[in-house]
Image (cartoon, rainbow, N blue to C red; front, side, top):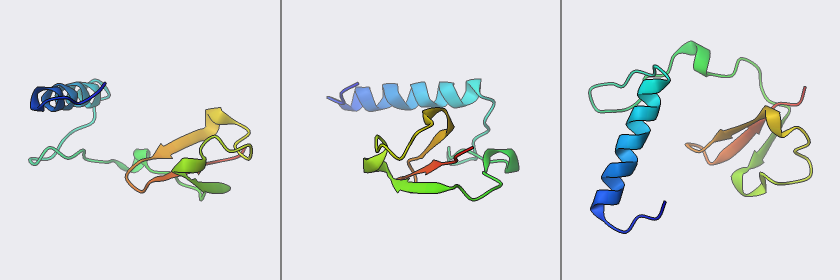
Length: 79
């Protein structure tokens, strides 16, 4: 989706809110998601690469690829 107006931003916010609500993720009073312990990785990944390198040939198992947009890295666990 391309953002062309303020209305588009509100549409995106609404879609993201609905998505989080559908995944039963609670929000705090300021609208930020409340993360539970189950949402965090328990083991350090075997390979950590920058987001820009997400299509790198070193990423052999895309099913075990986790995107971390807040930190702008991808966390990849080989297994």
